[in-house]
Amino acid sequence: MRGFLIAGLAALAVAACTPAAEQHGDLSEGCDARGVATWNTPADPNASIEAITTGPDCARAVATLIIRNGSGEPIYSETHIPSQVMTLAQAGTPAAMQTALQEWVDPASNTTMQASSALPEWPANADGPQSGEFPFYPAEGSTREIYNAVRGADAPMYCYVQGMESLNCLVLQDGALESVGVQSFPG
Image (cartoon, rainbow, N blue to C red; front, side):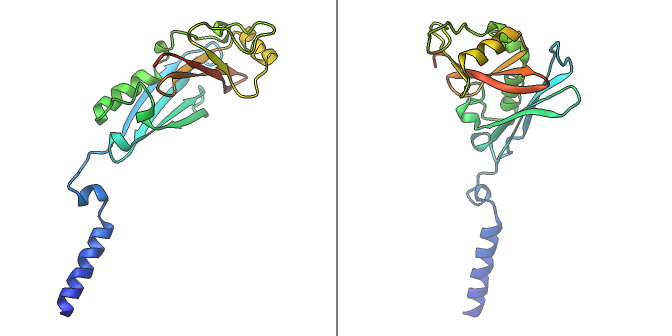
């Protein structure tokens, strides 16, 4: 009886130390992938945009976007769940995720607004910028005056898909990146 008890306790200890995926026969290869691109701006021609994923598999991975200045210092980072980001959601393997990350960080894919002067106009007496069928929502706390000053600065911008139906637009001013707002698009 004692032998059965010891064998049972040993089996429980092994099960407790074995990852859940392995216990259920789901040996995945993980989802470690990386995409990197150079972001050439007049303000910092050697800046870079990097995205990495990590997780037990691509369905349960986490994606981190990191933007670094030309000295390699991080000036912006944001973490996303890939299944909630349109450009990453369908990447089910590390190879597919690698391709998706590379496309996600590529500044050439940011063809809509590469400088803050391309932001939609925010007319006097309007509740917000006027941008037709693709509404632009200024960052929280932004006033018309602040928004129009950023727009008038013609500063470098990087907009990236942040969800299933929107872009987050970051403006580079004085060596720092800050969200200027979000543009929605039909999903």
